[in-house]
Image (cartoon, rainbow, N blue to C red):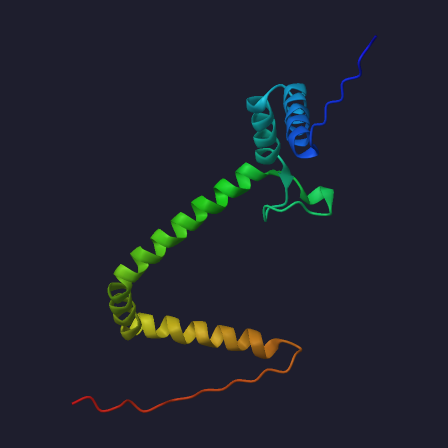
Length: 142
């Protein structure tokens, strides 16, 4: 006589085991975890993007590699910060030199020429121009 054996295993026990086997099979099918990570990183770094670093809906704008855009942006940011530091350090020296140049006859003449050239170009335009000149008296410094 044959006996029927019934084995009841709860869903909570079976589900994680089955899920783990499925995950392992998927990872193995893609060549292992290291291979998956390598492929994903390669895809992200070499994705074609616009000069802003985003995928454009216009494929003709997607001519740069993401990694190139990102590196360029970071380098430009670092250079910009350093330039701001150096300019801030040298600001008073630059200002003093500029004032000396403007106070000279040649400097005053250059400023006047630049102002007149700008006004002439503006006034020659077919659009209406508005020029405002404001002169404030110096405060007495005692």
